[in-house]
Image (tube, rainbow, N blue to C red; front, side, top):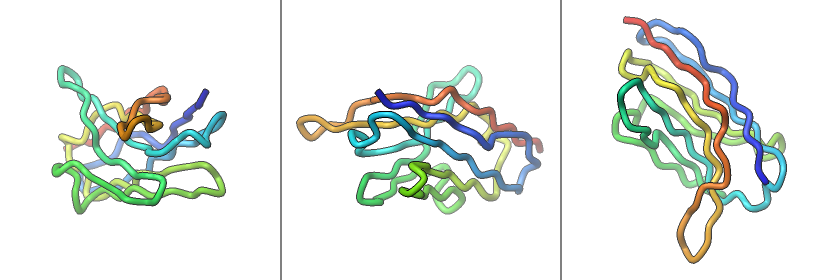
Length: 120
């Protein structure tokens, strides 16, 4: 099994920055893609960004140019650098680990979630 522990959420003013961290442990050799999802009150969970095992990244249109996904393989940790934050970025952010089978990604584990609040 894979365990994910997130940190780095908090309260920030619009235009500010935060960096989220997600440390993975356990059966990490099966992780082929990591992602950050977020869920705002009353809204569906959405994928914000992802990074594959070969460091290919993908971002939701709403965060392109503002968020950066990176990894430190030596620490088994991924990071989401969030710059120029907007009030609409307010949500609980979840780290997600995925494996792959038959060419399709599937969820291995989610973190517990970390709250990000952006004040206007």
